Image 1: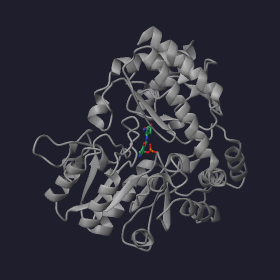
Image 2: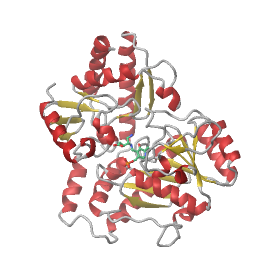
Image 3: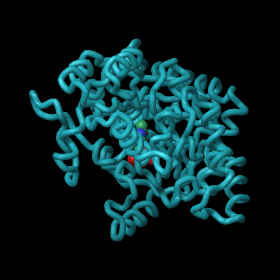
Length: 429
Ligand code: KE4
């Protein structure tokens, strides 16, 4: 592959944008090499500035579940743009997408739109704290909820149960109110709850983790958290930014039958434009300004242009529920093929999959939390990433990400991908 123009553009970008990127993971720091600059995308394919074509397994980190430049979304955006993009006033289209989301997702009465998953999760935690009048939160090592200060926390050392900042700029004052638990370890959560009686506002988690690679909850884990929250008057917050409108029309609450108190969304809900949202039963959502005391706001929140993209996307998913079956079957087919060729090449690996989320870990240890995810062979992953890139297969440039499957993929694309993995495994792993 020739990356000449991408390299020149990267050089140029770094003069005026930190690291040449507007989000760190895009800089390929975890895998090395020069990030590719994309010129355009359509369906399941990316086309970079050097004219290389890729089968895309990132899909803008999840939103393009129906493929890039999905015609109904493009049409909606073009039509809407002609009427003006944002007025800072209420518009009917916000009510339309809100009603559709409330119809599709179980156990929510009201929804508030924001502009990113980070904003959705940050607002959800503030709402939980305001509603319960308690200050501490529990999150899980390896779960990512965006870059709000309360989430950029790592486990405290030794006996400390509270977290410490994992980024400069996050204060100890903030970190002390975030407790870190081990994903899929109910006992660990129970201990933290007992140690911080009547102080915990919420437990926030990715109900299916996607930021440690894909890690489904062990049987009983979500149900156990639900019980714990009910026993201790703690709100359960499902961060469905990645899983929402992907693992089912109603997300993980529908798929696994466990109800959260607050649910956050992003990615798919915006159809590729910047949209996040958080939702809950009326009693909780009515705590939000202007009718309640918890303040939350945004200049472009619910702007008609982004709402038009999101409404077109959700309408398609709501009217064609067979999409979820189709995308899950394609992911299962891919899983089977990758497992076959990695085994044939004697490559130690584990594949985690649920619905259309899948990740490959170069380790034979079952990956069920951050520690076991971190145990995998990262050297192999780097080789694997670049080998596939060279074959025109674009996967996430980090072993701690999930592959995002789009229904625009054909079975021929999947066979090409499996054959490329076979070739890379034979030659470089
Ligand atoms: P954004 O603020 O990036 O829209 O959403 C934050 C977020 C919240 N919750 C979950 C479960 C998420 O996965 C994310 C963002 N996901 C990453 C990819 N794993 C976005 C990619 C990036 O940071 O550039």
